[in-house]
Image (cartoon, rainbow, N blue to C red; front, side, top):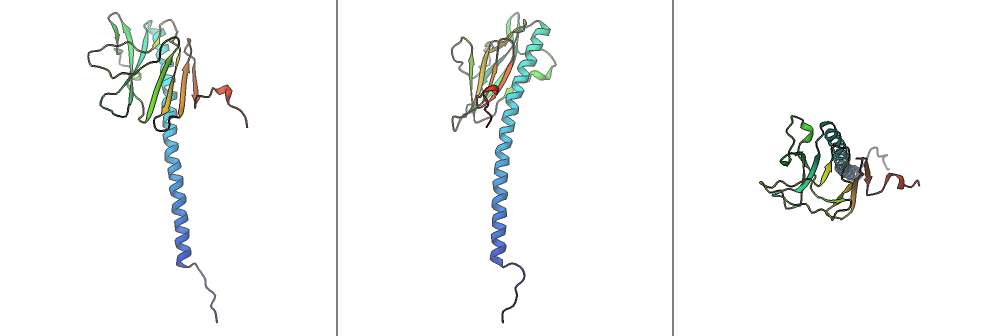
Length: 188
Protein backbone atom coordinates (compact mmCIF):
# COMPACT_ATOMS: atom_id res chain seq x y z
CA UNK A 1 0.00 0.00 0.00
CA UNK A 2 1.13 3.43 -0.85
CA UNK A 3 0.84 6.28 1.61
CA UNK A 4 -0.29 9.71 0.58
CA UNK A 5 2.69 11.97 0.94
CA UNK A 6 2.10 15.46 2.20
CA UNK A 7 4.69 18.21 1.85
CA UNK A 8 7.68 18.64 -0.41
CA UNK A 9 10.73 16.51 -0.93
CA UNK A 10 14.20 17.83 -0.19
CA UNK A 11 14.97 18.11 -3.93
CA UNK A 12 11.87 20.21 -4.53
CA UNK A 13 12.75 22.54 -1.65
CA UNK A 14 16.31 22.97 -2.94
CA UNK A 15 15.02 23.77 -6.41
CA UNK A 16 12.68 26.45 -5.04
CA UNK A 17 15.46 27.98 -2.92
CA UNK A 18 17.78 28.01 -5.96
CA UNK A 19 15.19 29.83 -8.09
CA UNK A 20 14.52 32.40 -5.34
CA UNK A 21 18.26 33.08 -4.90
CA UNK A 22 18.74 33.37 -8.66
CA UNK A 23 15.87 35.86 -9.02
CA UNK A 24 17.04 37.87 -6.03
CA UNK A 25 20.55 38.18 -7.42
CA UNK A 26 19.26 39.27 -10.84
CA UNK A 27 17.03 41.91 -9.29
CA UNK A 28 19.86 43.24 -7.12
CA UNK A 29 22.19 43.45 -10.15
CA UNK A 30 19.61 45.45 -12.07
CA UNK A 31 18.93 47.73 -9.14
CA UNK A 32 22.69 48.33 -8.68
CA UNK A 33 23.23 49.37 -12.29
CA UNK A 34 20.06 51.44 -12.24
CA UNK A 35 21.41 53.35 -9.27
CA UNK A 36 24.59 54.22 -11.19
CA UNK A 37 22.50 55.42 -14.14
CA UNK A 38 20.36 57.58 -11.88
CA UNK A 39 23.44 59.09 -10.21
CA UNK A 40 25.01 59.85 -13.60
CA UNK A 41 21.80 61.42 -14.90
CA UNK A 42 21.56 63.53 -11.74
CA UNK A 43 25.16 64.67 -12.21
CA UNK A 44 24.44 65.78 -15.80
CA UNK A 45 21.26 67.61 -14.77
CA UNK A 46 23.01 69.21 -11.78
CA UNK A 47 25.80 70.50 -14.01
CA UNK A 48 23.19 72.07 -16.30
CA UNK A 49 21.51 73.69 -13.30
CA UNK A 50 24.86 74.95 -11.97
CA UNK A 51 25.74 76.47 -15.34
CA UNK A 52 22.39 78.28 -15.26
CA UNK A 53 23.06 79.44 -11.71
CA UNK A 54 26.56 80.65 -12.62
CA UNK A 55 25.10 82.60 -15.56
CA UNK A 56 22.60 84.28 -13.22
CA UNK A 57 25.40 85.03 -10.75
CA UNK A 58 27.49 86.52 -13.57
CA UNK A 59 24.62 88.78 -14.64
CA UNK A 60 23.82 89.92 -11.10
CA UNK A 61 27.43 90.55 -10.12
CA UNK A 62 28.40 92.09 -13.45
CA UNK A 63 31.45 89.78 -13.58
CA UNK A 64 32.18 86.92 -15.97
CA UNK A 65 32.19 83.41 -14.51
CA UNK A 66 33.42 80.18 -16.03
CA UNK A 67 33.96 76.45 -15.66
CA UNK A 68 37.35 74.85 -16.23
CA UNK A 69 37.15 71.08 -16.75
CA UNK A 70 40.43 69.28 -16.19
CA UNK A 71 41.90 65.84 -15.64
CA UNK A 72 42.53 64.92 -12.05
CA UNK A 73 46.17 64.34 -11.15
CA UNK A 74 47.01 60.97 -9.64
CA UNK A 75 44.18 59.04 -11.29
CA UNK A 76 45.16 56.59 -14.02
CA UNK A 77 41.59 56.14 -15.21
CA UNK A 78 41.22 59.64 -16.67
CA UNK A 79 38.94 61.02 -13.99
CA UNK A 80 37.81 64.62 -14.43
CA UNK A 81 37.20 67.57 -12.18
CA UNK A 82 35.63 70.96 -12.65
CA UNK A 83 36.75 74.27 -11.21
CA UNK A 84 34.43 77.28 -11.04
CA UNK A 85 36.23 80.53 -11.81
CA UNK A 86 35.47 84.24 -11.79
CA UNK A 87 37.16 86.96 -13.84
CA UNK A 88 39.05 89.51 -11.76
CA UNK A 89 41.25 92.41 -12.88
CA UNK A 90 44.31 90.15 -12.54
CA UNK A 91 42.72 87.26 -14.49
CA UNK A 92 40.68 84.18 -13.68
CA UNK A 93 40.58 82.80 -10.13
CA UNK A 94 38.25 80.93 -7.80
CA UNK A 95 35.32 83.05 -6.56
CA UNK A 96 36.05 84.81 -3.27
CA UNK A 97 32.66 84.31 -1.67
CA UNK A 98 31.15 82.23 1.07
CA UNK A 99 28.79 80.73 -1.50
CA UNK A 100 29.19 76.94 -1.30
CA UNK A 101 27.42 76.45 -4.63
CA UNK A 102 30.71 76.94 -6.46
CA UNK A 103 32.50 73.96 -4.93
CA UNK A 104 34.89 71.97 -7.11
CA UNK A 105 33.25 69.26 -9.20
CA UNK A 106 34.36 65.65 -9.36
CA UNK A 107 32.97 63.71 -12.31
CA UNK A 108 32.35 60.00 -11.88
CA UNK A 109 35.01 57.49 -12.83
CA UNK A 110 34.63 55.27 -15.87
CA UNK A 111 33.26 58.11 -17.98
CA UNK A 112 35.14 60.01 -20.64
CA UNK A 113 34.14 63.63 -21.22
CA UNK A 114 34.21 65.38 -24.59
CA UNK A 115 33.68 69.12 -24.77
CA UNK A 116 32.93 70.85 -28.04
CA UNK A 117 32.57 74.61 -28.17
CA UNK A 118 31.10 76.42 -31.16
CA UNK A 119 33.66 77.68 -33.68
CA UNK A 120 36.61 76.32 -31.68
CA UNK A 121 38.88 73.29 -32.06
CA UNK A 122 38.17 70.24 -29.85
CA UNK A 123 39.02 70.79 -26.18
CA UNK A 124 41.82 68.73 -24.63
CA UNK A 125 41.58 68.35 -20.87
CA UNK A 126 44.91 68.76 -19.10
CA UNK A 127 46.02 68.14 -15.53
CA UNK A 128 46.11 71.45 -13.66
CA UNK A 129 49.54 72.59 -12.60
CA UNK A 130 49.81 74.36 -9.24
CA UNK A 131 51.07 77.71 -10.48
CA UNK A 132 49.07 77.72 -13.72
CA UNK A 133 46.11 80.04 -14.09
CA UNK A 134 44.33 78.82 -17.23
CA UNK A 135 41.07 80.41 -18.37
CA UNK A 136 37.86 78.36 -18.26
CA UNK A 137 36.64 76.60 -21.37
CA UNK A 138 32.98 77.45 -20.70
CA UNK A 139 32.52 81.18 -20.12
CA UNK A 140 29.35 82.70 -18.69
CA UNK A 141 29.42 86.38 -19.53
CA UNK A 142 28.04 89.18 -17.36
CA UNK A 143 25.90 90.28 -20.31
CA UNK A 144 23.88 87.04 -20.11
CA UNK A 145 25.60 85.07 -22.89
CA UNK A 146 27.42 81.75 -22.74
CA UNK A 147 30.05 80.31 -25.04
CA UNK A 148 27.79 77.80 -26.88
CA UNK A 149 28.74 74.16 -26.88
CA UNK A 150 28.03 70.68 -25.61
CA UNK A 151 29.53 68.17 -23.22
CA UNK A 152 29.29 64.41 -23.81
CA UNK A 153 29.51 61.66 -21.21
CA UNK A 154 30.90 58.51 -22.89
CA UNK A 155 31.26 55.09 -21.26
CA UNK A 156 35.00 54.29 -21.22
CA UNK A 157 34.52 50.53 -21.56
CA UNK A 158 31.93 50.35 -24.32
CA UNK A 159 32.45 53.73 -26.00
CA UNK A 160 28.67 54.34 -25.90
CA UNK A 161 27.39 57.89 -25.69
CA UNK A 162 25.50 58.11 -22.39
CA UNK A 163 24.43 61.75 -22.14
CA UNK A 164 24.89 65.07 -23.88
CA UNK A 165 24.35 68.43 -22.27
CA UNK A 166 24.02 71.20 -24.86
CA UNK A 167 23.70 74.92 -24.25
CA UNK A 168 23.19 77.82 -26.60
CA UNK A 169 24.34 81.45 -26.58
CA UNK A 170 21.61 82.41 -24.14
CA UNK A 171 22.32 79.61 -21.66
CA UNK A 172 19.35 77.42 -22.57
CA UNK A 173 20.28 73.86 -21.55
CA UNK A 174 19.20 70.76 -23.44
CA UNK A 175 19.56 67.42 -21.66
CA UNK A 176 19.90 64.55 -24.17
CA UNK A 177 20.10 60.92 -23.01
CA UNK A 178 22.23 59.00 -25.53
CA UNK A 179 22.60 62.24 -27.49
CA UNK A 180 18.98 62.14 -28.67
CA UNK A 181 17.24 65.51 -28.81
CA UNK A 182 13.96 65.62 -26.86
CA UNK A 183 11.94 66.33 -30.04
CA UNK A 184 13.60 63.37 -31.83
CA UNK A 185 12.08 60.78 -29.48
CA UNK A 186 9.75 58.68 -31.59
CA UNK A 187 6.53 57.25 -30.23
CA UNK A 188 6.31 53.50 -30.69
